[in-house]
Length: 582
Image (cartoon, rainbow, N blue to C red; front, side, top):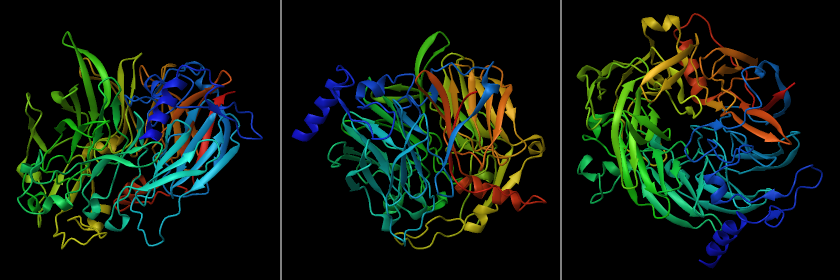
């Protein structure tokens, strides 16, 4: 406990002392200044020039207050530097920047530290994983910064702390047994002296959880399972057998956090196996948002977006924390563009989550209605999957929006969603078989998953979209439509811009945040499914993003190729790309 108190005191003191007092020496051979400790105060109120966490702030806005790059001059954006990562497959992590130090993760549990202005590599770390480990999702979605360390969650279910300046491994802790199918891909959440992660592996019949680790020692502080055991709240929504032990509930994406109430909010994946007739009931807390006290792990509230999921609609994207004026009332909201195709507006309180409103943002034919008081949907019976039953439904199992995050701009008041519209699916439920730790436990044939795509008639006009919504009115303000799918996480800035990639033509684009006009685009070496960020060094604003096509974007492309007359090939290979004004 002494070490923990020493770290907490150090970080608190650092918030009020000059940088030179509480910072490590810079790397030799760089122009960097001493490393600045990352404190709770800085994370709660991040400086405009930095991008300190997955979505820039605890509220998950994906917003940069920088405005030197504007709608007028973005056409002059040119590549400042690029760096090949040496890895293939899906590069999805944001470049994280702390006063000139940049940290990027890649597939295969690699962290690379750069001098952000020049692209000079400072150090590189790679966590070795067992050769026999099957990487179903070989990616990583970024690091967390806290104190003088960098933290990563790995594919073999470890949490690792590295020295931010040298890359030296400081500690590593196994969060779960990878042999049972557990793994992690998300960027950790750092808060209150803790590093918080969630685990994936629902396809293997794991029991999901969110857990916190002491930032200095790596010791587990608390663990909150996403699937309740008998006697726990929510257990009554599962059959009275051992189904809950293999109930799924993966956590794929970094949670949001209210630093005032100390409650973190996590999106939870679907239940396992897929077919709901094998696990009768609502199956809490699958396909839900859970509010969890970051200090104790206590459950502070939940909302289930849809019960007894059979469509693989993981609702893993963390909700955005936005205060909204609605009907003359200030609503402390949780906003979530669901994989189930509905845009959800919830109300957060320290001890509960309430329903406000929900409406479809893409074609959706499964919900017959949504209760106006509780938000509970009713289903069209013919579209409910079951063992031995074939069903058609919209949106597809990749959803109206998959894991790529939305963005919110407080200046325009608009929410921006990377969507896939008019995209449907057909699946046939099969017996999942007997559960075996570490083996797939799905209930749908893999061939069926990879060839399930069906296009609605409206898809001829386009599928991928970037949408802008006014949350006060619930009205869509503009839409940019792509002929192909969109897997592009979004960044928005005070320069009234929205940046994103996500299409198979490899282009990275900038839109006018107010009206959706396309202002700039650049073809990259590979498709862009990385999270874009913005930062400033020596008074100059930069835009950074990783290119590197793979995983679900590539799998969806493969599904399209089965019904299209030609095959689309997207080059492989990860690259860090940093842009500035010419």
